[in-house]
Amino acid sequence: MSEYILEIENLTKEFPGVRALENVNLKVKKGEIHSLCGENGAGKSTLMSCISGVYPRNSYDGKVFYKGRETNYNSVKDSENEGLAIIHQELALSPYLSIYENIFLGHMETNFGIINWNRYIKESKNFLKTVGLNEPPETIVSKLGVGKQQLVEIARALSKKTELLILDEPTSSLNDDESEKLLNLILEFKRQGITSVIISHKLNEVLKVADTVTILRDGKSISAYDVKAANLTEEMIIKDMVGRDLTHRFPERKSSPGETIMEVNNWTVYHPDYHTIKVVDNVSFKLRKGEILAFCGPMGAGRTELMMSLFGGSYGYRSEGELKINGKHCKLKSPRAAINSGLGYISEDRKSLGLVLIQDVKTNITHSSLNKISRFGIINSRSEIKKAEQYRKELNIRTPSINQYVRNLSGGNQQKVVVSKTLMADPDIFIVDEPTRGIDVGAKTEIYGIMNDIIAAGKSVIMVSSELPEALGMADRIYVMNEGKIKGELSKEDATQEKIMHLALVG
Image (cartoon, rainbow, N blue to C red; front, side):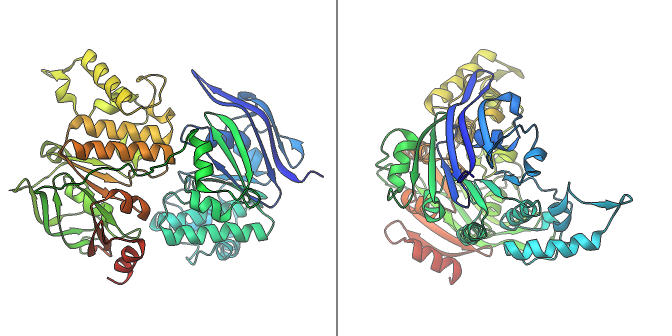
């Protein structure tokens, strides 16, 4: 028998106007952890979708062999029946069902049309123990955090007797502690003989767990490395990913912050459903003109809730406290009022809160600034096209056309569309929440360059980031939050990862 559980030969996949994959070759050994790396748009997720039946066999050219046999999958159900499971970056759980119902959804057995619920509650406990999730099986999934939902997805995959597990950006929405637990779980699966394929932009995690790394660029397989034999480094991976050396991941800039442009005093935000619970508790901070101010802390620290509440009350039952912009007291009762007061907000959840996926690039860029391209309520189509083309070129948005649907773009290019929309609104203060989540190192460097250009134009940036190297590399000052409170403040010169973690956990 072959030592390879998965073999791909000359796989080519085309979409209208775009060749996403071109003669890709890949071999995955039984029982190994194999990582797939590449820039956004390189074709990683598309390749895995072809393998798992998301795209049926007749939609691509080339051959896929699984356990020595050529596949002919026309749906995900076909691949799951043979022990191949894929977990996408956007989790596919039913939020209103319980944990155990999600685990067995779609493959419950019945007896004369009746389901033995007690059996599945009992069986689910074994899978939850395997993935290390200590929650009652009856818990509704929407009550869980993202990290725990990720474990439910993995438990569901294991319930289907999975032999090959594909994980697309499994740690992109997790904090460091949750990521560590998930990586250890994948290593445990390896000891149990389960093969894993991981798509990830977090190269430190790749090098920590992967046995083999395959790199895609522009839809082609560029290289494959045995991690230990090649003494593989992040720099080697990056060079193959982007086709060049990235000597400065955090572009240099001269920092000279000016006067205070924004001041928040004693800011408290109450939970939208449980009106007596304080999600943000008596927070005060200042933002200066021409600086990047970072907010760090663990997941659930209240950073996103703080920023959304400041942006026109986008979060919370109600907010209390004082907000000053350019020395003036502000009562911002809507996002439109926030935009009119010089605030711009780039959400961590670009697909739900930043973009309209069923609209094109042009519309997404301009829809927050229609007053600038319209007169008497009528949009000037020429002006709209001109503005959209301007930002497409300036931010290097890789799209065949500004009329392309945003849902068809890679994550990095979707993020650039969100940034373009905010730039067109021309705020004085940019609030950017996890600006590089789920995008590759090349696109990250481009986003960092855009942030530096914003500062060079005399504007200010508040950045929420869970990646400590990013905060340390970009910020002039760092506030550390946990449990809805600010635990401390660090200057660029004093800040280290250890100090940030100490403040977050100890205060």
